[in-house]
Image (cartoon, rainbow, N blue to C red):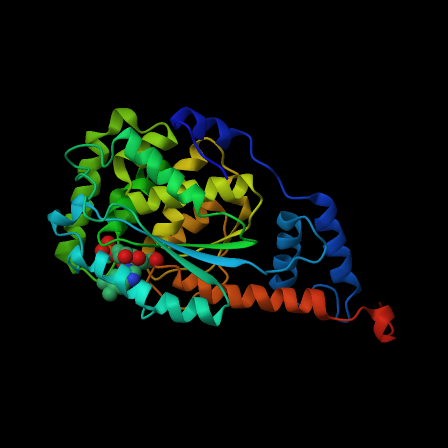
Length: 336
Ligand SMILES: O=C(O)c1ccc[n+]([C@@H]2O[C@H](COP(=O)([O-])O)[C@@H](O)[C@H]2O)c1
Ligand SMILES: Cc1cc2nc[nH]c2cc1C
């Protein structure tokens, strides 16, 4: 299991990342060319199969241990009126995940994914980042390691989150990492009105001003502006990359966890599939900046891994074709 000993260790491991197995990619690509279809006719399904072959290191990749993990955290900035829902909903939804009643329970089951729920100190919200760093160093490291611990033996990992107020933290992370105006990253989240959006923009701007001298390293950006569930996703992203486990990203918040990491390694998202494009307006901007093309666009904006879980069904379809089809030679079809 991967554990980060310090911020320095986290940064050091980010610099030197494994790359996909080129031999397995070439073998999968050759197989795609031999299957009974015009070359390229399965479009992105072909790319998905080759992508998974590279990261799993085998010509015929499989999803036998598909796993969804939902991290939950509470946010001090909620006191600034940045969400349409009260902070109590986070702990209540965690109970709902555990009881099996949430969307992710139904969607993970439909996609044949095991589901883990990881609440992170819900009774101790992070500090309001307009006043102080959201987390202390030890707290931030603990959240990174909670994420890293969740990777375990998965062969495909869905990373999801739950945290009232976390679209504000996600917008702050995007703005700190990629620049542009706070207003370009802020959106309605759970459904705030125009005044709520204005409060969110002010909050992000105030956070960027307060921490401006310290926003040049991934760990500090995460610690000062993030939340525990987002930091856990960042830890899971790096640990899964080190273990060559492909990841399906969910919406705006889950994707925002990558953004600070790109400061040290722009290729950190290379083992990730963008499961969908959320209706939260900043998500498409983030995906563009990261060079990720979403699989689905269903106007979802729920979080909790839901869009990524739906996308897993497409990925399973890609592998069913890749592993199950006959070649031209096997089927006696001319033209292969
Ligand atoms: O995944 C998304 O793109 C997404 C977009 C908007 C809202 N959410 C979910 O809604 C919560 C955050 O919204 P808010 O308004 O409280 O910042 C959090 O629990 C997220 O999982 C998720
Ligand atoms: C009910 C509810 C469910 C959620 N799941 C993820 N974020 C959420 C936010 C709310 C408000």
